[in-house]
Length: 426
Image (cartoon, rainbow, N blue to C red):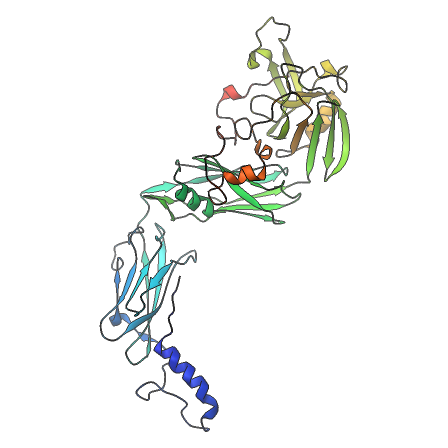
């Protein structure tokens, strides 16, 4: 940032302003110390200042401070600004006597800077020197990939950021988090949460507003993250949300209520997990829609030939966990739907209701299970269970709002890490 002490020229101008009303018409109001009028155009101050770390064809080291020094001829520096091509200012300090300015923050790597220096000579006349210089490219780069892909999603869809390198140091995490910008129209309160050293999720305090526009971008390009690691250019992301759609599946009443913008639009008889296979409670987010899935009991550890064994073609399957929990058509259990829980963990319904649900929801919509004897959906290791953390817990995973502990254990929830996780059950 620029630092501007009160100069002798500024003092003279202030004195002129006070005398203007007292000077007779046609008289000179004020001049410099030798009687000359103040110059409106700064003179070339090239001979009055020197630079450290820049000049010639060499590129400046982004990790070394930039220095500007006034030569010992009675001149002094009155102001310095250094900005890169993106308009970012470099913080710096000017000595009290105006003889030296020094940057106090690292420069961006691989960037072009414009340095503007204002001076005044021993007579108070203003000078100016403007130079451009480039910084050396980063030796190590941190790349960021945002997710999901651009498109329209439900209001429960978290934003993900995948880093190309592990970041563990709390101060480096703070730099990263500060440089990852998320803006929503309408505006929301939200935070990044460190899932692990290479994965961050962003969610608002509440769900996203319906019909919102969300933009995600990085300002880390060239910025020193820590050590020799600097941010690389990142492709921005724009998302939209559809109407707020929530499906509340009550395992106790055996019914699902689907709401659009808070208004119930359909109530569906369902069956959920029976004892030993109880459906997970909590908020889940629609991950994918699959018109057909072959479901086998062996995929969830049920041996062939046992009373629980199955091998079934399943239609209109809406996935809510990577381990194989779906909302799907279950024509074989229509007699129990609305009355009992007989599935192996999925939410089953009639073929007509499942087709309607499949065609109504989109990826990112909310499926909330209540009243089940199962455990609560985990936050990160089996899909998007982000909403099952309180805002206080979520904030603790931010390097800016709380202690960055690395978040809950788990792999990247942005998609399946291997095919073993894609095991459907009915």
